[in-house]
Length: 502
Ligand code: NAI
Ligand code: MG
Image (cartoon, rainbow, N blue to C red):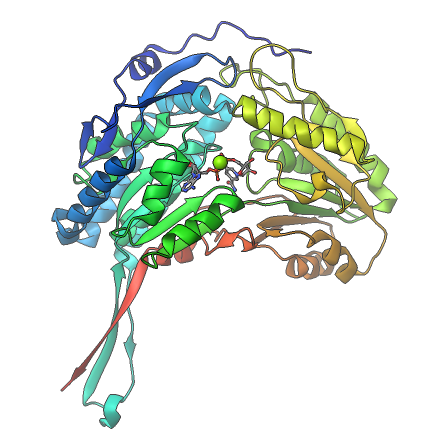
């Protein structure tokens, strides 16, 4: 099998976009990068160069932070919360109006199938913005009945105000580039913050489109600034910047630790959404007609390049062989191909580097004694395609079962114990705690097991349920804080307590 490469010429709109002079979006203008350096943007399905974009260095980050600081105190700070709501809602409308272009650019840049890009940009992009647009008018403090300095009741008033945390640096990865940008922008704007966004060096295109959309939506200049750049330069400069109040980061655990170190200089707030190695636990009474497709999607969605991916499958020994065989069949049926082809269920990995990394893990799986059930190969020819791969009889001493691979590799192991604590102990091994799922028809087992899994989010009879209102984030080394929902908003607010003596 090799990936068919049909003639998939980009649309006129996409060609026009790609043909632009791609600059940095600072203070509401498209400006040249100080260094005049550019990076190549590659289509991972064809390895062809799509375009080149300007990348910012430390000086450009300084300029962007200054623009964000100025905007924080400007017109933006004087808007009513209703006006903020309308602007964020308008941005969502602009995103919907540009859905075709946004989806196509996302597919060309990242590789994901078009259907997934279209669906997710609408369901999680625009709707996520609308969800947070609604929060802008619901940010409230408390009045607190206290008696400071021993004054009598009724002789003082204490209240809290929730204020925007300030200038936010958002550093995001390449696996769902536009969604990642929106996940930071929605709550930041609802809270009244201003933002400097640094997209991943592999996938800058839809972030640049967002610059256009912010202008069209009428978001005041400097409220959103977008600086493509490398992690070690632009990203590091943003994380260390003395005038940035918070970093919102999504990416690897390794870089998350660097962000914390860099943020220590001015003790800026940090939220981190990091790696995962999430368990999917299948009990013998589970409905296999839901388990098989659910587990296959849970593992291989976005080619496994998904922080919530269910990458460790625990199946009760009574049904282990059956489940492994059927998940293997389902995985083998996924059609690999360019995301722009309507016949593709799975696209390529993001880069040659990522393909080598994933293949290295697959080799280690083969030599460590795990049983290869399906996949295990990269496709020959152009594009960074790796077949969905399932290993059975893995255990947590194996590197493939312990480390985040961020590719289409699922590890299966059986359990015999009906002692839930023992099953959970195995499922909770390792440094991560992002997501997890439990598959059973027994309501008690379902809830008890969900409670025992050490993760920020557990789903029952599905994997990785996502909605703007469902808090999302990691335990252990999967992160700090929560995104989505009310907690996701609170991460962009700070509290001021005010007391008046009458
Ligand atoms: P990464 O963590 O290096 O990149 C994520 C973002 O951080 C990018 O914007 C990058 O430019 C930036 N960055 C890199 N070094 C930085 C630094 N020193 N200071 C500030 N920003 C920095 O992820 P990478 O290298 O692309 O992928 C490596 C592995 O990380 C993947 O194989 C996967 O295991 C994991 N990963 C996890 C993600 C998640 O959503 N949890 C997303 C992306 C990667
Ligand atoms: Mg990196």
